[in-house]
Image (cartoon, rainbow, N blue to C red; front, side, top):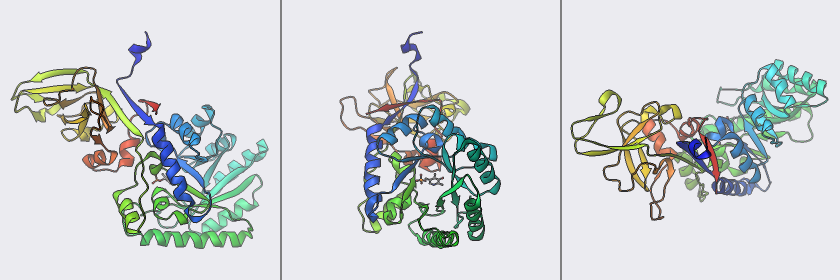
Length: 396
Ligand SMILES: *Cc1c(COP(=O)(O)O)cnc(C)c1O
């Protein structure tokens, strides 16, 4: 089979220029307090759907210092691809996986003594060190330890040969969902209190790597970043939320310009005419009221094009919108192209992102935000749910 036959029917373009631009503006923002913080970018969730390895490469080339992942398998994938950058694991590791993290030279979040023991043991065996970041619970009640338990674990790390307490972390519960940041501020206060107590208790003269800033915190309070920002969504060109954007404006700052990097594409597989009175798709949820030109797209919920988009979403053909009609099926979706002059078999379709018109001028766009609104969810979920199997092509 020649390569042409292997051309996929759906793929994702990842704009390296947009990623590089975003890192550049976020780096400038992060320096506002005077320092030059470590930029630790989250590439969990298949790099927020952008493709783990290709995106990690672009981010590192753009000046990102560390990568952060959720689990050990992502570390393995990045190392196997030849990436040697520091990697920080933020998710659950079993003791055996913590040993693997040491072998793969990844630092990781810590809240459990058994994980510490296993990692330190492995480190001693290999003549290395296990670098850990103790997670402090400040109000999210998701992962981490409260003040006293965090203190005890830090003391234990300090007494454990083979282990090094490298950092202290917490995570905001309610920063991007609101324009009222009193709760986030209270978390910050609690975090600082525990961080100070740990430094005092351990008699540390040098400050640990203390980090709390996700995208929203970095955009809102660049002076809080300290020595490391640990962010995801903004790197991909998406504002954490409308509330975050509004809050930045309310603080009298000019919002940075972020450029979405992802465009999800497919092609038209078939076009046919449906007479008035006939139905389209499973469950006969859409009925033609006029002679209708229907385009079939080789894309469905298997690809991550959510079934909730049935009769709701719009796609772009020739730079203009065409409505999804009937139910999204496992591998196929129908759109109404009656009024779309550009529609023809083989024509490129944009499911998410922007598309120029055939004459090259600016066309329309479907943002991850808009798709999230159709689905009653957030854009984080929209981009991360795009099937991992779909090829990501770095362009630009
Ligand atoms: C995902 C995640 C982040 C990044 O959050 P964004 O809102 O995408 O910037 C930061 N810290 C932790 C612990 C996370 O899980």
